Amino acid sequence: MREQVIVIQSGGAGAPGNEVSCFETMEEAERHVEGRLEAGSRQEDIQVFRAVKLEMEVRQRPVVTFAARAETPSAGGTPPGVNAEPARTDPDHGLPRDVFTDRSF
Image 1 (cartoon, rainbow, N blue to C red):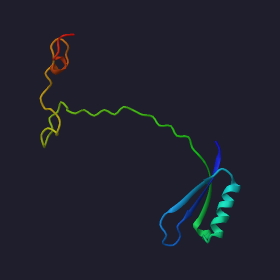
Image 2 (image 1 turned 180 degrees about the vertical axis):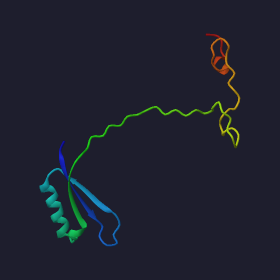
Image 3 (image 1 turned 90 degrees about the horizontal axis):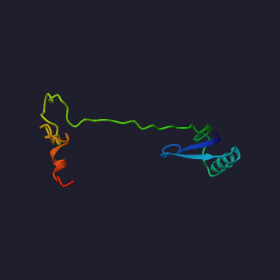
Image 4 (image 1 turned 135 degrees about the vertical axis):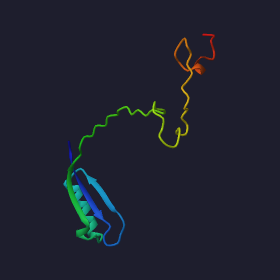
């Protein structure tokens, strides 16, 4: 992994926000800081860091939320959008009846 140089310049007294700049070499960062100082920035408002980018691994995991549970909600009745009646199933297939409205197949 490559090391980078990060320069953070705060806005100074009363100025909003920070400016963050990343450089591949120390020389590039030095030129940047010199330019900021020559432009009137205060040394106290500039911070310089050496950093190595960390690898990040993101894993997706299934998240399951059931729309209706076997238990009846204790207060407030059935949540909106949830059918409180059990689904009527097709006796031949065990699926909801409305799935098999066309028996031509």
